[in-house]
Image (cartoon, rainbow, N blue to C red; front, side):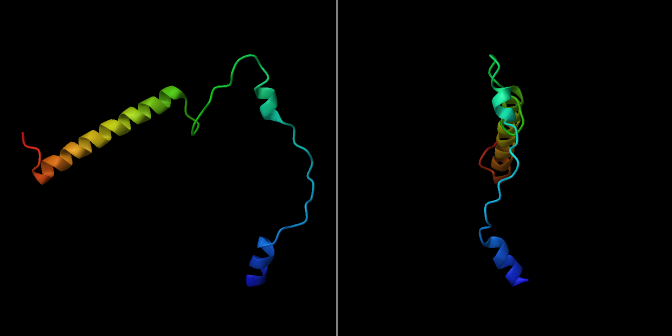
Length: 73
């Protein structure tokens, strides 16, 4: 078992694989700029996630302040 683990960590001889076509170059070759996505979300989706996260932190913070008696209505 440990021998197999040791063998898997040793560098293997370089075996050239069949070249894959560079699809990224084709996607960016058009005149329009490609939309940049982070975690697969558009800019509007990231904005809504950020707003909801901010509101959740505000509500939980206010609830914690009320629970500890540092904020009184």
